[in-house]
Amino acid sequence: MRRRQPPAPAPVPFSPAAARAHRTALGLTVEQVAAGLAAHGVRLLPGHVLGWEDGLLPPTEEQLTALARTLWCPPARLMGTAPATLRDHRIARELTRDQAARLLGLTPTTYRQAETTGRWTGNDDQTRLLARVLALDLPTLIRLTGRTADLDARLRQVVQGRWQAQLHPVARLVPVAPAVLEHVLATLQSEHHTPTSWGAAPAPTRPDPTARFWHLLAEAGADGTP
Image 1 (tube, rainbow, N blue to C red):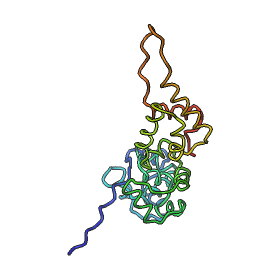
Image 2 (image 1 turned 180 degrees about the vertical axis):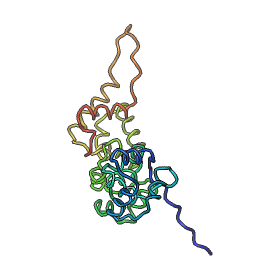
Image 3 (image 1 turned 180 degrees about the horizontal axis):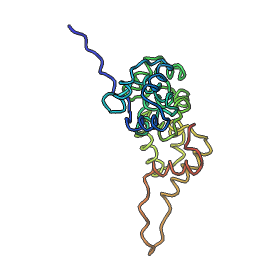
Image 4 (image 1 turned 60 degrees about the horizontal axis):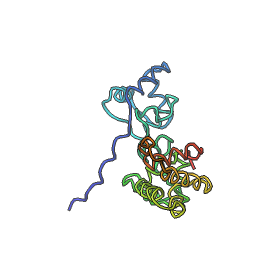
């Protein structure tokens, strides 16, 4: 019985136009770029570089990193779009999977599964480390670790009940200073329970609790990398 092959990885996000624009801005020929790639351990013919710029084939992770170093720009500049996945953010930091796993204290297999399945199983310390290693702000960290639905549910309970009961569960999801989190949750609940006067104009539609939560954290300067 033939063994099932694992699915091929999705192509690395890449903008042919950005690659050509960076090369042209530096005044480099494709031959010079090929020589630069070789200096970073990637040996390809100049025609291969043209193939990237013409959109005929995408670079691999290793090739994209080498190209970014050759063109003196961050890999994200050559992606054509903001990093959206765990893999995208890792590549933007010029890390291989094995390097990321080692920095996070994970086995290569465990980290690979996190990237391919989109399910993060690291503990609290590893989650904070993930944010620092990949330079993730808090909203991105929550999204990439699959905690969005849980946070949404917790914040709905904050505005519907007692915020104190949700302090610990939210703190497990969002690693910020306890005093800041207490203030934000108390404010969030208070805003949703502010009474309106009889005869006053109808209150505007209240913002989504999660959107307001992130706004309040940003005002407190606590929405960046934990």
